[in-house]
Length: 175
Image 1 (cartoon, rainbow, N blue to C red):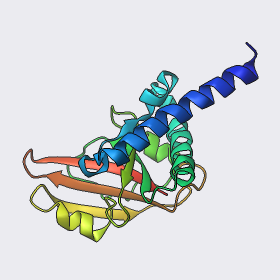
Image 2 (cartoon, rainbow, N blue to C red):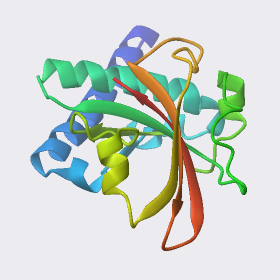
Image 3 (tube, one colour):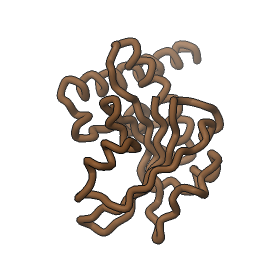
């Protein structure tokens, strides 16, 4: 099999995996439970940390394409989970791809679907999280944070999980 055929097969496999996740997520209302798809489940070659940024970009673009092709009225989000820090940092030190890479935690990036207006960085979503999370901070980030401009919005979010007294930090790209 030549390289072009292999790439085509890999691309088709990526399409099938993301589409199956997306359609099942919509059908089963998994978006209400924040069912996600980690990039290493799309392609095991994307498991190494040094591939996470580019794998996330590719997975995000694919998911947006499939959302549009299937005429689904959802927001596609790509999330990068960051190491938890005390005291929290409010995202002011993440301005470049390299700064983001240096703060990634142990979990590969993942895709999410959200109903429009219920994305994590929106006031209704933050209000809904009260009691589960507090001290929520949302900061917009440069649109070209990943080295290229993708999506409609990039932002940093941090909050304290009340039950565990633990801080969570993430960067989201939405489209």
